[in-house]
Image 1 (spheres, rainbow, N blue to C red):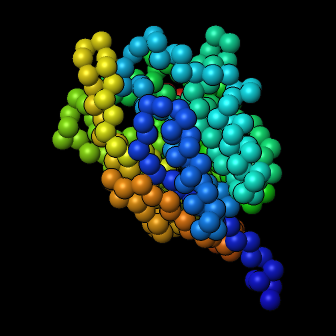
Image 2: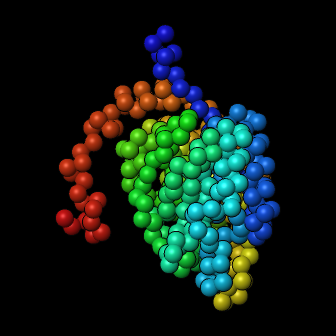
Length: 299
C-alpha cells in the first residue's frame, strides 16, 4: 500500500510529420496530431522543432529573417494555448523568435489549462553544411530551465542541445522528471553517406539512463530543398522519433518515413524511487567538476 501511494502516472507523446513551407498547413497538421495523441491518452505532447515551415537553416538568406515573430502575441503559440486548454494537455511549442535586435530558436511551454509557463532559448547553436543556425540565432540566454506543469516537472531543450550531457544533467538537477527534445535532423548535404540517426538516438538514450528519467524526442520526416547562394540544398529528415525509459531503453519508436504519434506511460513515483536509490545524484562530486567550466581543460 505504501508503494501505491507513491504512484504518479503520466502519458507522454512524441509527434512526427513532414513539413510543407506553409504555416497554416503545418500548424493544422500539428493540431490534428495533438488531438490524436490526446485520444490515445497523452498528457504531454511534443511537437518537432520549428514545425511552422521548412528547416530554413540550410541557407544563409536575409529574407528568411522575416519568418521570425515576437514571443508576445505569437499566433501559433496562442492557437496551441487554446488547444491545450480544450484538451487538457501540455504542449511545448517551438518557434523562431524575434526579440528586438536579437533572434532565438525558442520554445514556449503551454500548461494543460492553456497557461504559458515561459520560454527556453536554445543554448547550443550549430554551424555546419545544411545546419547554418549561427546565421539566424543568437545563443540562448535563458539558461537550462525546468517547468512545473500539471502532470510533471519537465526539462525541455532543443535539437543540438541534445548532444551535450551537461544540459540534461543541469535540467535533472533542477528537478526535471522527464526530458523533452524537439529536433530537426537528417542527411548531411556535404556527405550523403553520413547517417547520424543511430548516434543521435544513442546519445539521448544515454541522457535518460545517466539521469534515470524518461526522455522524449521528436523529429521531422520528408525531403526539403532550399535555394541557397550556391544552388539548391537538400536534406532528407530521418524521423526515428522515440521515447526512452529511465534506463535508456526504447519504449516507443517511429520509422524514418512515416507520420507517427508515439505514446508511452510512466509511473513518475516509481521512477523517483529508482533514481534516489541508484545513487548517481547522491554520489556526485561537484567540487571536482570545475574543469567543466573551461574550454581547454585547464583550471
